[in-house]
Amino acid sequence: MISAPGKTLREELHRQQRMGTRSRQSRALPEALAEVGARVRRGPGRIAVWCVLVLVAASCTGPAKPSHEGPTASATVTATPSEATPAPSPVGALSGLRWHPTPIAPGTLLHDDGQRLWAVPLHGSPRLLWSHPKQDVYMIASAPGGTELAIVGGPVVRNVSVLYLLGSDGSVTAVRETTGGWSIWTPIFVRAPNEPHGQIRLYWVEPSDGKFDLTTDTLLVRVMEYDPSGVHEVQVPLLWGTTPFEFSAYPGDTTSIRVAFRADNVPTRYEILRNADRTNGGTASSPTVWGYWHTITDTDVDTGVVWLSPDEYVVEQATRRM
Image 1 (cartoon, one colour):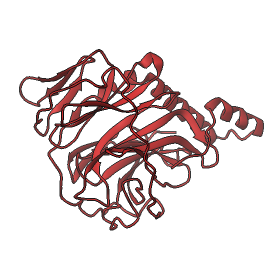
Image 2 (image 1 turned 90 degrees about the vertical axis):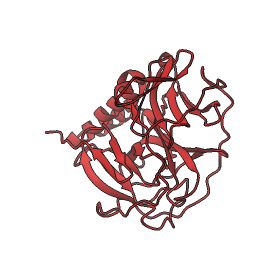
Image 3 (image 1 turned 30 degrees about the vertical axis):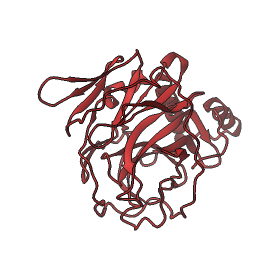
Image 4 (image 1 turned 45 degrees about the horizontal axis):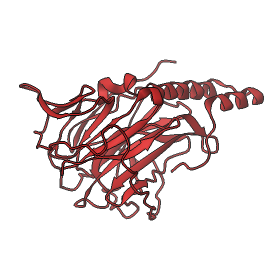
């Protein structure tokens, strides 16, 4: 995982101007990072449309099917223990409240209008799940069965993101809060690749506001995991110039799909990869190390992945004309 200090977009532009190396590809990186930074700052206004509605999936307990999408896209790594960061003290407008968890049928959409959380079936009337104080909610994820949810919200004007866990016991806990240009994206409930029958864990991505590491030419992004022991950073080794950008998964499965951001924009800005730790035996993986990835496709759009079942998903593929 990236740990080197980052530089701002403005600092990198000044560096390139001094060196006189602003080629066509080097221009593409600052432009893309500016777009990413604006996307992070806009928060709910940019992504509420496509991420506030999610499909609740049935419980998935079986092992992942073998993947045949091609060669691995990252080097093998050795699993190492990760120190836990204790869950923060209750913060945020919703922390410490109570909700009433009830099972949600597979195929149900989840939607939050800022004060009410709804279950919206494909046929029939919406069902109110929870009324809460006003909060901008821009991402929702469900564990299998729908009795445990994760929502991301926060006051946009303060550039704060808060990840809440709505527990199956009715508790509402602030698991993580980010400030200073960091945001919280794409929470997912999955099992670790080396624990196909283990506990379901909560994972998410934390992108920076346009900062990147000049030593590896990558956007600064953290991948995080939460379980009863606390919050952990996850190692996701990648090829030079790429960084994790978004994650998706069928709830409760051991296989996830990652959208990777390419710094050089070649052949496309994004690469879609499927985790293959499970099919490779899981010997080089752990709850905090995901090392094997198979390329699915390249694309210039970041609409993510839609899962229909543990083995079926839809990816939008599009290429920008230069």
